[in-house]
Amino acid sequence: MKIVVQRVKEASVSNENIENKIKKGYCLFVGVGKTSTEADILALAKKIVNARLFEDNDGKLNLNIQQVEGEILSISQFTLYADVRKGNRPGFSYSMPPEQANEYYEMFNDALRSYGINVLTGEFGTDMLVNIANDGPVTVIYESQDGKIV
Image 1 (cartoon, rainbow, N blue to C red):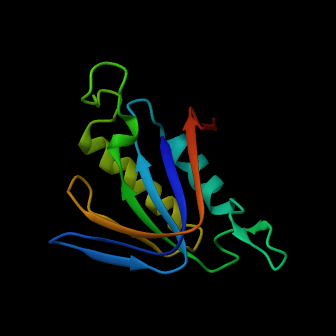
Image 2 (tube, rainbow, N blue to C red):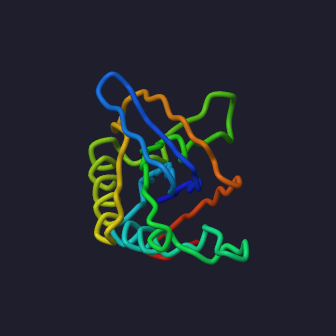
């Protein structure tokens, strides 16, 4: 699994079916690969919840999302597994098939919620408009294989 974490002042996602918005927190772009496991879900949820990406009173990145009472906007992003080695059009053979990927995406969001964080989502498998006010900017990429952060 690969997840792009952006610290945001606010973020929103919308299409004809949904409109979700958060204030301070993280906007996550969540990619589920063919070899992703449930252990990856748990490892990444724990790592992201505990990541110290918010500034303390001294301006140092010492606070996690729970300490700042932040929210999460989680958006599925199969293009994180794009294969761009050949030609000019990306291939997506490394992405997990949609039905199973959606199941993993929902399990990941539930794992985040188990830490008491408000998690809103986009709509899996659809075109969406995403607006982000990146704070910092702070953008970090997390990846897990076989339940271990890599």
